[in-house]
Image 1 (tube, one colour):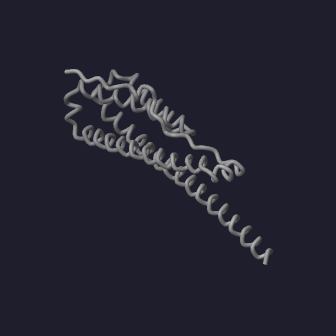
Image 2 (cartoon, rainbow, N blue to C red; image 1 turned 45 degrees about the vertical axis):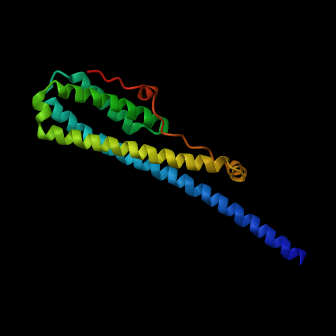
Image 3 (cartoon, one colour; image 1 turned 135 degrees about the vertical axis):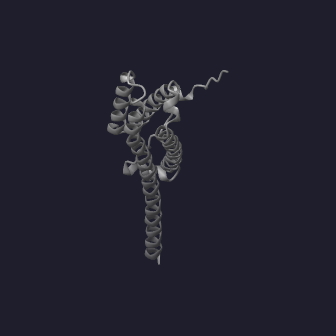
Amino acid sequence: MNLVILVVIVVAVLAFIWFLYNSIIVAKLRVNEALSQIDVQLKRRTDLIPNLVEAVKGYAKHEKQLFEDVTKERANLVSAKSVEEKAKANNQLTETFKSIFAVAEAYPALRASENFMQLQEEVSDTENKIAYSRQFYNSNVLDYNTKLVIFPNVLIAGMLGFKPAEFFAATEEEKKAVKVSF
């Protein structure tokens, strides 16, 4: 009888450990999937850049440095590997986009161009999708990181070498208050 109780206890403990391990793995996979969704949106954005640059080039031929900056920032985003590198490259590219749209303000014919307006709308839509993807990723990171530190998961996660995931964080520049003046 004691042997049966011991076997039941061992099986119950192993089943519990198996359940905890699987829940951590599922959370980690969700983090990876959410990061890949950010990558999809960043890729979409980098694919839009050459079209946007070409639309602006015809109107603003003297803005050579801006076009070189856009190309460089696009390459940085494509080659970024870690979450931190992607976030930094994304933020730099966002700043460059602001410059492109500022140039467009100086050229009324460009602003009125149907091609430019469509590209601007696609970029804006993509920016919204990137923001949502970042939020979704960070929610999954929070869930995963929480699973790693709560008891008894912390025991299993530590033994199996699970590490917390990085949040896709805003830069200090993005955190500053926006000043609007008329």
